[in-house]
Image (cartoon, rainbow, N blue to C red):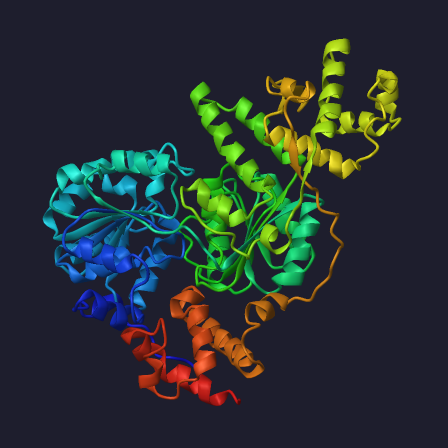
Length: 622
């Protein structure tokens, strides 16, 4: 069973109509969401805009629709060369005449795209910033009719953002060279500092600013104590996300490789992605992740920006992210289709020690290191909060909210406790070793002393004779690690710059030791029990609201979609997203007219896939 072949973009006529008509006919949606309508109308009217909208919030439509309404070609500046083909394929699939210009094309391909641009045959053209700033490109655009400039991933222009790109600094030239062409800059999340920096660097001071709520209510945020993180990750996948697509972020290339191998050995289809792999391998792995269902990508932060895969059901971090901004951007790659998804992070003492050491060793001046420390402090505060994770996250971006009921601390409230006495005991141990013996040690050895463990190292150093030896037996080893971690997070303990991860007191420690400062701590959860689960549990959980017949039909539609995607060499979501398939499975339209009313089914897709979809629906018994 197969659908009709997608026609080449050159055979499509330019879509014509008002913004709402185009939204319905081309993209298959009945109405705009949130601020989309205001943004679209503003840009169609020739106004500049800066749009801050969370991943999955529909940023692309904010420039795609105006580019179709306004005369000329919309030029999209994006750093995502590896994804431009997929972005163009997705637009062509709905009948939009889209192309890109980048370093992957032959000279003949480039000349053909340039010819079509000048002939007025393109609705949207994607460019990398490196190509845009070439004088030859500038001269080409001078000769074309440009409807708008869209600057995607605009946080890349900011020194305060988490993904700084120097090539973006030249984009202020858009305002100078083409002052009459409207510009729209878009990014998923930005603090006030990043927002201000984007505004200044892109000369958008007179632009209208649209700041949507950054909340992603379909994502459940969970942060767990690190305890064999790969095993914990495996448990998460098998019990909650079997068969689901997911992304696992790791701090180092080595961890990426080991994590991917571990998952494959456990029967999970996983792939590595990091800057140390050759370009061909990275491209092949990215392509598999986008085009196949159920692939888990283990990656450094080199992967993910601009990934438009709507059905990523989980994003996991097995190392502590460097900033809340980066963490939120990365977790936002889950659940772009609005369906339930998970953001999971395993976090431990060694993460804090490692991150502090990396900051101390980083290049840059004191101001740069202070900025890195501020980012880390905010990330630690999120990990250690006893309140709602979502409230803490949104507060970081300057947005107020109420407890969400869909994060770990809301679902299983965490108790706070007065940790002043344990803090005093640990800080006293550090002081005695440092002052009495001019020695510094890491957390493990300090905890052994407090627990009264006669390890060879304790005996060799004579630390069993210290007055603090054995005074901490009221807490477990895991609880003491929590004390150390939280003292580091609160700035009451610091990592020494000797390169060995030893611990020292800070100026603030004195108030704790003197009893003039109370130290409240987050209660350490009990060690979780190992659970086992079958593959496929993830899909079952994500579709738990579907009855048995609808769930079976949804799976059959996914199989049909995979066949279509494979035959056309495009990602599955280019055919239809999961949200569209779920609606098809629950409503079972029996005519083309009824099918046209399904979200995500525009005119082009109705013509391309309509009869084939109806055949699947009619062939699947209730």
